[in-house]
Length: 53
Image (cartoon, rainbow, N blue to C red; front, top):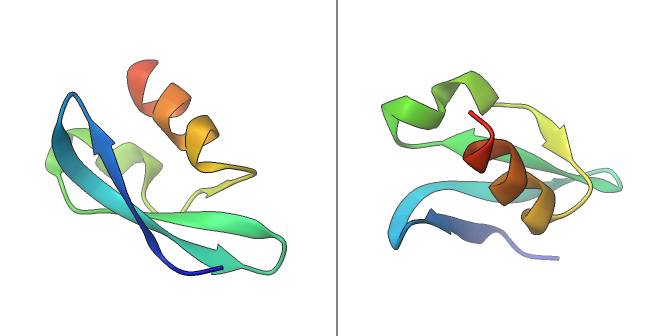
């Protein structure tokens, strides 16, 4: 698995990188910084977490 850009509302807000069997989110926008370094099962789970912020 490679790193993947995560977009929300058409704007790149971070990337996910493989971390063991999960994905670690690296935030690049301030409004999603609360999720920085959190681990998720899928990129869709990251997008859901961003939406719920």
